[in-house]
Image 1 (cartoon, protein in one colour):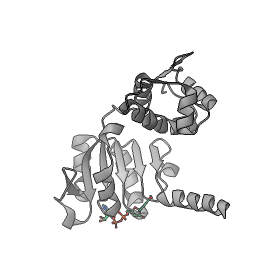
Image 2 (tube, rainbow, N blue to C red):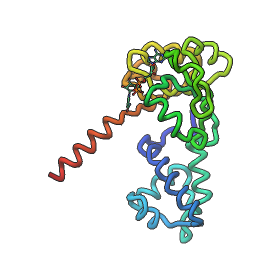
Image 3 (cartoon, rainbow, N blue to C red):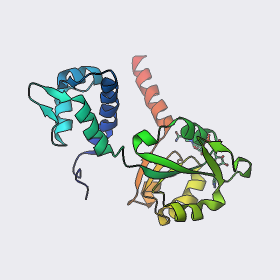
Length: 211
Ligand code: NAI
């Protein structure tokens, strides 16, 4: 059981946004902020902010507001940004390369230690200082290095093949860009699905409301 069991998933999903805004405020040298000012910046109501942060013991003080640095650090702890979890990425095609190059894994609690692809032409190429390995070496690599998170940038058919093997090898969390529904088959692993097309269609809906 985690100490945050019972906190609603919608609150958890808002935490990265709090973390990002507070990080920007901290960078700008702001020391404290009221829930009202935070609300004006973030577009959540002040009462929503107080309710959200109360779920974690309430970091604010009446009449003072929130100390940005300590709130930022507390939310960072909840999100596990210092966890340094070992991660691997499978599929070094267009998407996998973009993610490997541009995502700041370290500042979000992950250490990308291995990149795999079945395309032999890619083997040995370097991506953010990490050599792309042939997928045949996946089993030995996982056994020797014990990664706990996998980023899947492969087609759905390949994800279907790898998911059971990866779970067997100790992977506990998937950042899943494939369209294979991992959580339906492995309810005990953490899965974060990313479907950019869903976001695009949501945009389409909102734009159509303006027509
Ligand atoms: P891509 O064709 O450029 O790259 C796919 C890579 O996966 C290739 O390098 C290929 O060799 C490798 N691969 C395929 N089967 C493999 C296996 N069994 N073992 C190891 N490596 C394997 O394709 P792209 O654009 O990078 O997209 C990758 C996947 O992600 C596609 O299936 C696509 O549908 C999906 N996708 C998902 C998005 C999302 O928002 N969730 C957005 C864009 C793509």
